[in-house]
Image 1 (cartoon, rainbow, N blue to C red):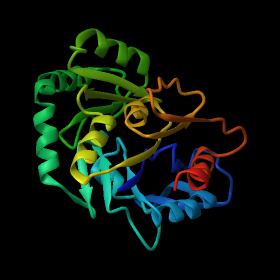
Image 2: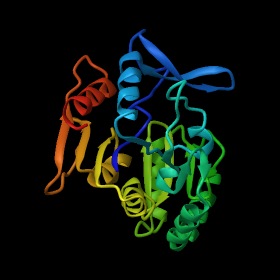
Image 3: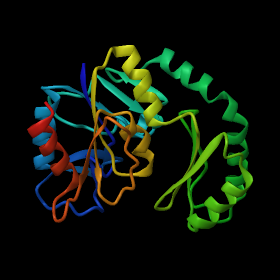
Image 4: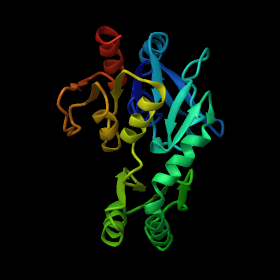
Length: 253
């Protein structure tokens, strides 16, 4: 099986706040509001990719957030990894065997997740209720992200969990729950022999590391591994997804 395993937000789809031009296609509705889009060019190229290899979205989104996305009117991915790889969706349904193994894997970090929950509940900078995403990691938002993140890193056992920030979002995630580990599990289960991946953030480095061909923006500091084809993308005036999908179609299908 040949796979294109890609991050979603800011890699293939973009918030309505992100300027990608007027030539775009709606990708996500939330409570009646249009919240995410793809460029029309990326939408058309992703359709070509879908019909030539297996497209697998790989996202930190929760199951509920992922299910809001519509990639194409004629198809949806048969496989998707969400919850930072902790949940496998097969034809839109959660695979229980996968989830049980994920929960078993992060069991040593459970105490730290609960501790992080308590710390965030008492954080005066918090601007959103604290959430345990799909029973796998902790998430909230903060009005003073640096203070919140520093406090968590000083208090938690960082041999068990990682603390991440993305804008005003704060995550506490078990070290063993990452997109790269999910791709390794997927390779074993589905006999995957080739993976091209794309990602734009630190969350995606484990995903990129497991790929045979990795696409990422030049500004992301990515430590490549031996034997891997790395394609840093300098977008300039272009949208990242347009460049990635164009290069994928030209050279790796």
